[in-house]
Image (cartoon, helix red, strand yellow):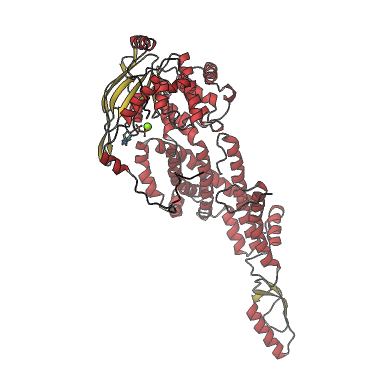
Length: 305
Length: 320
Ligand SMILES: Nc1ncnc2c1ncn2[C@@H]1O[C@H](COP(=O)(O)OP(=O)(O)OP(=O)(O)O)[C@@H](O)[C@H]1O
Ligand SMILES: [Mg+2]
């Protein structure tokens, strides 16, 4: 990418270093030990995840990044309890988890609001399941809707909302259960760049205001660096931890930091990990066989003005 | 004004054009019918004798083929006998629109010619009851079973193979059996409607249930829903609009089994009315009765469609 002289991504300012020291003193909310997953596919068994270890501390923001198909979704689905691990253990507050539960909230990439419920009733869904009274559930739901800035839409149905609004409701719905950890699988993947940036800022704002640990999957490097305290980099075939990067960009974050030296250094490192420089033969294999279908001399790339 | 390309695939039509086409879809067949009935040069293959003339077997009101009539006419002319007269008519099985309209009207105003006969609306009401009970009984078992089959693979494996087999057995084939078990009155008729509807219903509903987005179930699980809550707070409301649509289509199928059902045991209802009237060649009454069935079917479906829009406000304008 850049040919600028960048500092190492490992260098942290004092403020950042003390922040990480304090963060690691906090109790561990999520611990993943020796996690592995094999799928039986038509082509025989596929190892999607192998020997994953990591910890997330209370109120930490962890991003998981990795090439497509490296098992990110599989990992988060196991954490949510939607999929069983083949090996290893997931501990929440030190206790092993099995099956889904309201203490692990999840926001999916696709829109999973219940279309037959209004925004308010969607947010109340988990509370009512927990046996919270209707009146209390309603007032709590309204607070959460307020938090994501959608108070004007509390009686709207999901199909009346934009994509970004739907995901905000999904966040409110997951948070209403007051989970210990919020699991997010590329929640902004389907949004346009502008909405996406807004949603990232929103999410950090929400995260700052409540006691929640976040595990956030993305394949967008900027998004990962902008949001995370630490980034868990996975590699593919089989999905293994490549590196756990401590993001040296200080908080509070803002979009001006996208061109700061720490940010760029981290991004460079991530690019090295995720798109390693390829060997010659691999590159030529990847080249497309293109037949030229335009007139000779009609070049797009050197049109003269 | 911008021109509308009415043949652009799946493009919504302007409302006025749409309404116009709806009216035309009824008006066109009616126009064809009226043209064939009222324009003497169209079809009219028979002659109704008005004056018998010199043909010995001609009687007033008698209907005869146009060719035969022409032959007889030629013969009579040769022999120098008085000429018969006749008017061009259509076969008796095609009454003109106004005759059917009159029959339609008198069906409600004039008592049947024979005391043993039923009024049209009595026959219809009887048929509607048979349909209602057959369909309701089928739905009471079929819909829950279908939902369970679509939700739990174990229930599906246990039921669907047999149902899949059974649905190929034609419902009317069970007529004799139904009469032997349930007697000759309404029991076997309701049973035929039940058999005709039930097996399709289970399969259709279970398929609809399976089409529910799985990620909604997963979302509910991560929100702490237990099994019962998943079934009653996610699956059931999630499929409700589609289930409603299925039921509308299934109700239409139930009507088609009615005709067979009513011929079993003692004939009754609208089918009895129709066969009876056809036997006495009152084809105007036959058409009136058939139209009545059509109108009832159409009106019920329109009402149900409207109701559906009220019931499921979250269903954006998905085509009904
Ligand atoms: N149910 C399944 N059965 C068989 N193989 C599966 C299943 N789910 C995932 N896999 C395989 O496991 C691997 C990891 O898939 P996963 O969806 O977790 O990747 P991902 O990192 O989320 O990819 P993406 O960035 O495209 O979302 C893939 O090779 C995929 O083919
Ligand atoms: Mg994925």
